[in-house]
Structures are given as C-alpha cells and as structure tokens.
Length: 310
Image (tube, rainbow, N blue to C red):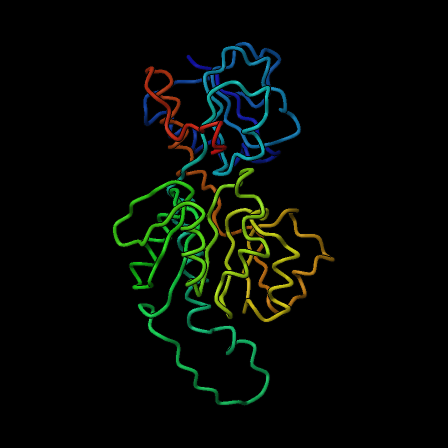
C-alpha cells in the first residue's frame, strides 16, 4: 500500500480529501494518505503545492514523484533538493476555466463593451465592431492552455496566430516560433493573450521593445504569469497611447499591493488571479492516474523537463 503525503497550504486538504479518495478508488489504488510525517523515508508520493512546511525534499528517499497541484512549477522546478520526478498539473477543469476567462475578455475588448459600461453621459455613439474574422488575435504560448484557448478563439472565427519557443503545428492556427516568429505575430496582433510558462527565457518577454512591435491601439491580456511583463514598460506604453488597454489576472506580487499603479490606471483592468483554478474534482483524477502509473511502472503523465523549466 503506497504512502502519500499531501503537502499544501492550510485548509486545502479538506477540499481534496473526498475527491482524492474517490479518484484513487476509481483507479483501484488503496493508499495511506497523511498530511504530515515524521518518517519521510516511507513516503512514496507527494501531492504538493508550495508551502512553508515542506521546502526540503532530501529526506524523501523513497518518493517516486512529486505531483504538483499547480500548472506552473517555476517556484519549485529549480529547487536542488527536489531530485524526484516532478509532474505538473494538467487539469481539464483548469483548462475549461482558462478558455472561458480568455474568451470572455477577448470578446469584451473585441466588442468594445467597456465603452458602454463606463459611459456617464447620454451620448448615442453607435460604433459597430468588426466581425471576429476581421480581428487578429495572438496567443503566446501553445501548451495545453494556450492551445485550448487558441482553438476556442478560432472556433469563434477570430484570425488566430500562435507563438511558441519551439515549432508547433495546430490545425486552424497560424503557428510561429523563434525570435523572428514572435515579431511577425506581434506586429499584426490587435489583441494579445499571454499564456507562456515563466522561465529564465520568458521573464520580461513583453518589454518596451516588444510592446513597441504591437500595432497602435492593441490590447494585452495576461492570465499566464505576472513576470512575463515589464510592468514599467507596460504603463509607459499605456500612458503614451501605444496600447489601448491591459487586462491582467496575474502579478509579480500577489495579492497585488494596494498602492500599485495598476489599481488606479484607467488603461488597466485587474482581476484577482481567477482566470483558471485547479478544480479538486478533476485534478484528483489526474493525480490518481499518475499514482496508478507509478505503481504499475508506467511513465508518468505531464513530467516536467527540468532543463526547459516546465
């Protein structure tokens, strides 16, 4: 019977207890699950989200895999004490939530909804938006979440271009890669969605130079990682009128500090990291399947490439 350590922020276990037990039963795994241990050498799997109680993985000598509850692993992938297999969360519920949030905000900017919501005077201003097939949208990052969002937007007939650091092929999406591909995508994008993982190569990807590649009046939407953006460069581009708006769900410091200029800037919409959340019901099935695979000697799903950082 494998021993599983559930290590996450306080209170999270209560939301995962029942879904995880059901999911393990569904795949035929009987396990002992603990939320703390004095015998790390007996633990076979760690279900993990970053927390202060577990920061050193060295004592877990029998552990076959650390199973992240988060899609992003940048906070743990460089931990030198973590020598075990590391699997990121690829959760169908998280994917659905991201698609809904991204689609909603792309449509909001495409249709010019803010102009009507913020009107304070009785001005009849019949500005008719273009059709979706006339609007160019770029999705930067074509992993599971980026691919799903790109396909959903293409399904609404937006002209979708995608960019990734390595070559991708997705039917219906104009895919680009590499430095030249990034510039080609940004130079024609009216709406840009950032869904890249955070690595040394993607930090501050959208700096002053690359923001300057965007057409005047473009909109930036970031539900990926806060550090993908150079914040000062973004505010400068908004103040100069180069960018029309930025809708941001993720930030370098969370919660976003009260005095941060994003809160009061007229060109910024802040949402409190709600674009996509790991859903216990669906995430538990992903974790249970990986434990089943570990017990059966099969390859783990969603194994992190340490060199690439995701």
